[in-house]
Length: 91
Image (cartoon, rainbow, N blue to C red; front, side, top):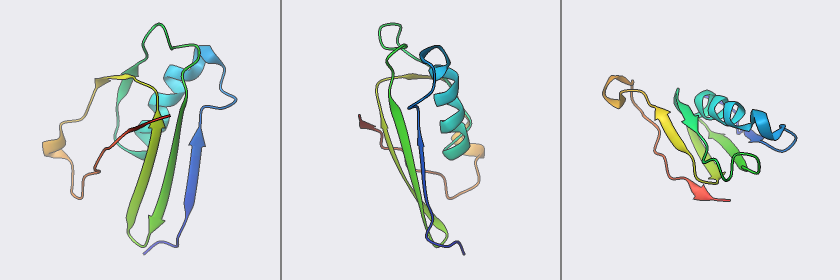
């Protein structure tokens, strides 16, 4: 059982040319291992933030982001359950 912990991650302060790698790493650390690609037109101004709150053994993750494309994604059939439910929201 975990204490009620609130974690917040953001791309604020990350240089524009590093945001694609930083966002992919944040998503991999909090949700599932993945690689991403940002649209060329928004790559330099891309915004994203994650908030994870632990409620006992359950994690509630809020993801606010601009559009991006996952380029590699794990096979969900081989993940141990419970698997995360992903519902991204715009910034």
